Amino acid sequence: MPYFFTWSAQRGTTGIELSGGEGVYFDTVDKGRFLDMGSLTYQAALGHGHARMIEAVRAQASRLCISTPNAVYPEKEALARELLAHAPAGFDKVFFTLGGSDANENALKMARLFTGRHKVVSRYRSYHGATLGAVSVGGDWRRPLVEPGLPGVVHVLDLDERSGRAGKTDIPRVLELEGRVGAVMLEPVVGHNGVLIPEPDYYARVREACDAHGALLIADEVLVGFGRTGRFFGLEHWKDASGERLVPDMITCGKAITAGYGTLGAVLVHERVSAHFEDHVLAAGLTHYAHPLGVAAALEALRIYDEEKLPERAASMAPQLASALELIVDAQPRVTSYRAIGLFGGVDLELDRPGFTRLAEALERRRVYAHLNAGNGTLIVSPPLIISEDELADGMNRVAEAIDEVCG
Image (cartoon, rainbow, N blue to C red):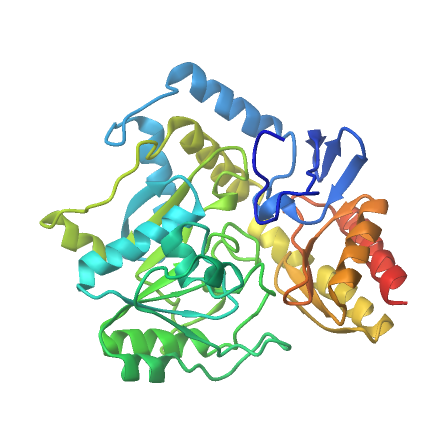
């Protein structure tokens, strides 16, 4: 092939030759139609071949297809206002990016500019993107391969890797010991690295510690935002110490912001941070900042999420997904635990890497797509939010059959 495949050695690697799709199914040239239980790379929240999304991008291309970073046009302002309407009170500015990685990258840059501090605290077994700064903050296998990376990153391991839950966080103590930390960057729910769900008081403690030590709290909603967990933003599941909606300092977005129909990311910024840049230079920018086609896709996606109440729908279907995962655990001793929130769930499997290869082959034979992470021993499902109850049941049956074949 004249191009690289991502996250892999190139020799022997082959890709899926996509040819289209409809609803929760995508089509391939050589292997037929797959039931997409992974939303591709977690971005296809509205599924495949969505007519409204395609028309929105087409219509935008006919109106305004190219812009400059500082251009002003109606859709750009409308999208910013829509995003801020879903954020907690006090958020008043949006910085647009090309995707989730550079949303996190620019959030880190803003934190440095605002606080004058370079240290960042994040978790092991997290993923924050592929650019050098973002991968440095991440805590999985990708980081050591490219080190030295961003200086001043401190990782903590305070989520139980098997249960995915923890009532106690080490972050307050780490902030105290480290001193002059500029930001704490966390996925509200750790995503591809295991669907790790903190206990109810986890983020209240983190928020209090950030306030006490002058650190900003950055919520990385790239994977779990836009309804995946049954709330528009994943952090909405947690309250602050007074029982009110927990308010971070920045929220980063990507993936489902366009439902995969455009290239876009965003950093939502609270007024306590954005006010700093009224009189101080925001040293950040991108050639394709707020590209019209990505903006159009995001604006239409947000309309559909709201009109069809897809976050609420994900919440209503959560028991069905959790029940299906529980049945898998009950049926297979080598499947040790499960976790689920909204239309997002995973199981832990006692399989070696060859076992995960066999599982991938078993899923492919059943024409079902899910996420396998041999390094963490997990299988993760995150179907499009438009999935029906019957389609979800079919998908989980196929997943269960594949696991039974390999683990039985």
